[in-house]
Image 1: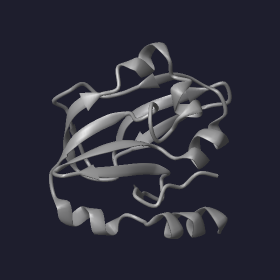
Image 2 (image 1 turned 90 degrees about the horizontal axis):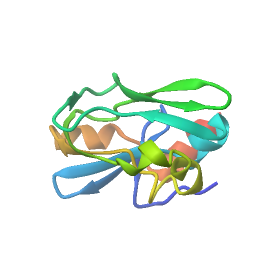
Image 3 (image 1 turned 180 degrees about the vertical axis):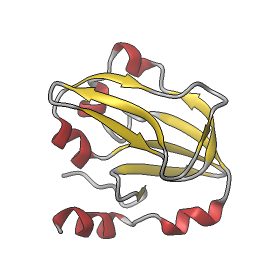
Image 4 (image 1 turned 45 degrees about the vertical axis):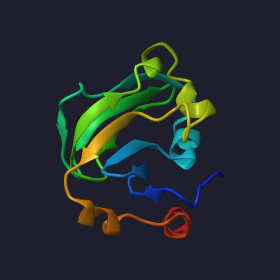
Length: 126
């Protein structure tokens, strides 16, 4: 399983890549492998506010529909529109082409509540 060390992780299986005062968010390699082939993604509109711990969208796989939970508070400034036509990018490249949304970080102190790659690895082994 691929867990890049330069990302932060939530217990709900989202990853966060901090770039200044913005963050890219997607689901982890572990999450996409558990879901199976992803066939549809529902994401918020640009300008929407996401709230930590609240659903911001969903992914549908051949097995199930799963909510996406916001790992931090923020305002959506970009959505990966390519996933509308190619949701399988989440399976193929969860940390690169499969990113879901970019948000303006509302409170950078929330980042310290997220997990390192090592801590996330431990949480999924429990």
